[in-house]
Length: 342
Length: 162
Image (tube, rainbow over all chains, first blue to last red; front, side, top):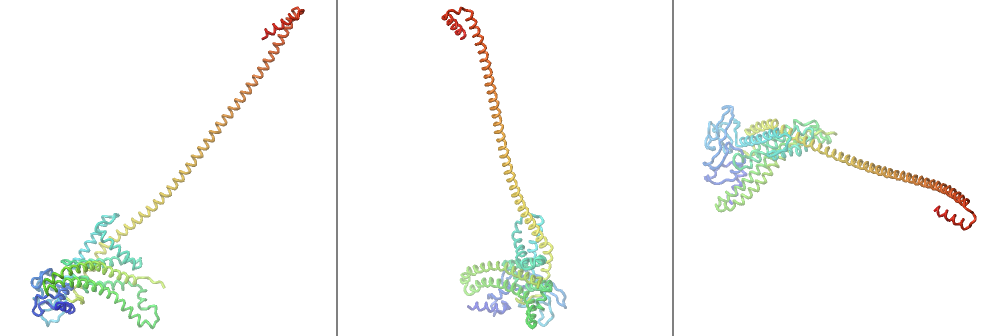
């Protein structure tokens, strides 16, 4: 059971232990670190192998600092974090810092990380599919949809009819449709890519707080910039006795910020949790295997069965979270542009 | 890297990527796709309403045809009835005329016969009177002494008459 406690320890301490730090046991399996390495971003794309034998795809590092300006080099120069390069090094959290510990100058890290690359690949795939679809509409004018259209078109119609037009007043719904469709397909595509265990999938893009934060900020800006006077009146001059304004107005203002904030957290937490659970089930094999190899083999069928089950559930979650994010966005926009007739 | 700290690099690339995605997909994907879908829906709706209209037209035409047919049938029946009546009337008339004619002919024939008969009787009367006169003459010429002889002569004359 010693391994089990290591699991919880590793997970709660947010993974910062590197393998070598573990009291002189370099080969000891640390599920917490493994899982966190998989669900967080990285400067190289780990493909297979462990420790020194690890094979990974090096990614471009782009750094800006006022003293050195823009610096670009391959992440392979760091040799998996064992060496410093050009005065920079990767710290144990995976971030980049000055090799000189005393240098406190800020570094802006604009590297093409694993998540950036995964996002670009996902977006390119999505772009090719839907623009190709758009082009074949021109060729197939007036005919029944066929092939790939039958897969994507129901989703588009679903977003149009059951999300946008159901939540936003009809005359304005179609104006927000490109944004809603883009958000939905972006999240859905990357959720699905995240479920593919091998390159180019597996990156936890939609489970990264930076990604969900940007999406939430876009939603926040869209909602508040398109809000009409009724929306603002509802916040600053609500239909309550004046003395209650002291309570209501701060709550309403908080709500404005809280709505996109919750959007950000929900997507991040759901997708990350899914990845963690699947990885956790796999880790069971190695935890038991470390106790006794036979035990690892014995646990593996159960582990695989659970992982398959979870993956299927995650397929549902991939759609559901994309849908929920889009639906809530549509509802927030709807509440901001709705005309009230008192 | 940290789980809950947004990395500035990822935020930057996400902003760039998503903005590009939004702009490009809006122009090259969503607008043409939504427009095509709208057009197709319009076409389907139009076709359906046209089909509905055509169906209504068909039903109306069928009704019209039916009523036309019924009318035609009624007219035909009326014509047939009229023709039959006409025929009956013509036949009746012809029969009546023929009867009349026959009756007329008959009466005329009877009249003729009566006339002939009267004429014949007159002739006979005249003949008889002539014969009677002749017989009387002959009787007168003979010796009217013998009754028996007289009788014989009358007998003889009468038998000659026959």
